[in-house]
Amino acid sequence: MASLKWTVLNGSNRVPSPSAALASDGIRPTTYSALIASGPNRLPVPESIPHSIYRRANGEIERDLSLDALRAAFDRPEGGTLWVDLDVSDDKQAALLTELFRFHPLAVEDARNPSSRVKAEEYPGFLVVVARVVSFCETTPDPYDLETANLTLFLTEGAVVTTHMETLPAVQALVERLQSNPDLLERGPARVAHHVLDTAIDAYFPILDQLDVFVDEMEQRVFGQFDEHLLQEIFKVKRLVISLRRYLAPQRDVLSMLTNRPSRFLPPEAQLYFRDVYDHMLRITDALDSYRELMSSTLDSYLSQVSNRLGSVSKGLAVFGALSIPFVVIAGVYGMNFEHIPLAHHRWGFEIMVGIQVAVSLTLLIVMRRKHML
Image (cartoon, rainbow, N blue to C red; front, side):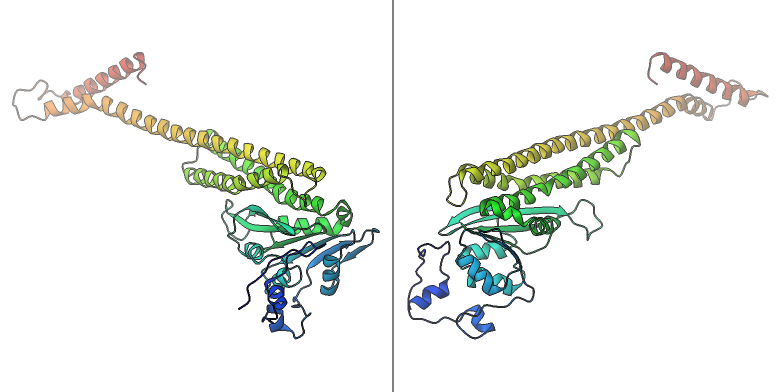
């Protein structure tokens, strides 16, 4: 069987697909598109047309291009900039990554794998960046639940292709932003890539605002009106902060690499804008560190409040026990079976003994107050 040969075509920003490599050796493979339609140049037709914008070099804007127009714009950019957004949960749209754009199968596999780690890798002909988008989950009653999705970016010298498995608010905001401002494509693919990553990172700021609300409410419930059931929520918020910190840590390394490492897909003037995204990342990381320390302090304060309340209860029980000692002792003495006990046959003996018990208890109470034991 002929071996696969990966070569970069002259003047092209693409890597041939395995099917093209096999065809060059005289072997006609059975591809995904061949299962859908006959003909060597037929592409799988998605049920929904992917979002796309193409800005020609003369400033002309085209939206939602057909598959043939996408192929022409991608193969012959002629100074224009192409942006395509694919929902790779649709197999037919995902097939366009290999059949139309001819990206490397390993990069396509990362784009379709929701568990892919955040990373940036450069292949011959394109750069792929996997970012993690986070938002609060609105389908569960727990206000602290997060939902995450990977946003994958394919960057060539003339096009930007974004892919995602789920449509989170940040992804929808990105699509609406580019559709309402197609002039952003005038600045080139690298600047479009900057807008993509900037949107993904800025999605963390609303979460930080909500975290601030959570922390303020918990402080009020600890120091204002003490809530005995607050402990579980404190741990939920701490887990939320740790999860966000875990999602952000690898993205900081990726942005640092995109900012400082030379790449033919990221000119130096475009890397300046990636520094701004990296600065946003550092601000978010610092804020999460502050929230983590604040939640630790809130937990310590909660446990201190619980300890103080336990101490107050124990103190009250101790005072009650101390004041009851005279009653127990005197009643125990007069409960012994002796015939000659003082006041045993006195007419007011019981009243006198009760008075003595009360007097001794009041004396103990006065002594404890003077000793600042109460």
